[in-house]
Length: 632
Image (cartoon, rainbow, N blue to C red; front, side, top):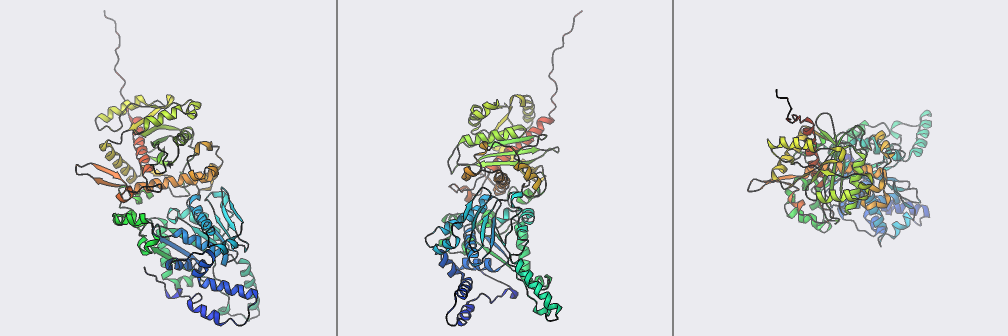
């Protein structure tokens, strides 16, 4: 581990020598006010001691360094490997900042409300620990947990709020500190247009105005010289937490920009207006093996020992190394090029456009085990160019089959579905369960399967498409076809076809709705039967809200791309190809393990899209019939 900083960043204000200087200046008895100020100054200069005193937690050296940077820098970025404690040290920072700096307004944001609440829950956990007596007293009992905000409010004017990115509701928020978790999943548009405006007003604006007015009076009197003007220090802060990303993503662009500003601190100061100090930056980049071994989850060590260190995914997730995204079978860089920029249309959809046509694909799973595979669904909006856009995605595990049935019913009744593809494994059981459910029967829907083989090679595939054209009948809901995944030839062809669709931009990925306020607000006013959506946000069944549902769908589309980027192809001794997660991820067990079911649903969906276009373009000659004639 190494630390570096330019000459302009050397700061003696908070140093070991400052303790001796502070103590040497204390003479006689201190009145109450001076004693309080002295204690706060001492604790700010000795953050490790402050944390131990208030929470009972003893920080490791790298944690104390990171905390010091958060306290004393305007912009901080932690590109740390998973398991290195980003969320923990962020929670510690929120507690210490709120106590030592009155009127601190801290906002925690992330790509989903779940993400921002994770740090909030970590704060709750620390405050509830046995050693956090002083911190609990400082925080008091003023806490609220609602669908749209989780917050603490302290008596000293400080506050901590975890918020969702829900468009119109958060426009009025203002903060002195913005903490963004999972920064790599946040687009530049959302950060610039939704989050950064929170920091637009300086925290000490009233105090600044007083100083400026006094300086103007002194200037009129000819007393004030330019070198004596007060230099305002920017107290607003932005903290970005993330594992490493691809080099084409916004995280890496920001990372490089901040490094440049750190190395050119003097030039940055010269750009500032007179009387204003340039903001200071901190970047921490730490791999899993750079911290004490006892602080790392044993599963990470196990993954590294099993060969994970040689894998690009492991290097990004745990070694904090950026990569260009071209190493996977499905190029992450090319998938990003097929993604509509946030703020543009089409956005994700929770209700289909009435004039559009959609393909639905399912990778079913009947198990309700917390460690099972996901039940994956993809919804693709067809376009006029022979391609489509993934506008909706679903993937849940650990819930009953009835929850998946209700969600599938919600999709069928809110999207104009032309064709449905489903993995043959479990297809009959799921379709039968749907048809027998009160939801389908109440709407008079009985799904029927088409009898054709979509995996046939030429020339047989032409006859199968002709058969599919005769079989397809939307009027009687005969629009479901099954695909057998044991067909190795089809598995190879379908993956090659998906790769080609990504390479040639025949499949696109919808943008998030939060950065396009008009689209987001329209979704907020849709009248959907929320009972059907009980499988989503499974840890918040009693707190379902439309804004969280919208952000969750956007997250699932991102997850679909991430799963595709993780897929690796391997060839057996007999020449068969396997498309799966890297070996070290495939070996994982447990609820939090990596899954690939949204990738599978997309694979099925793109093949169904191909099949639908072939059906539309199939011009079958009319059957030959006998024409009677009269014999003379």
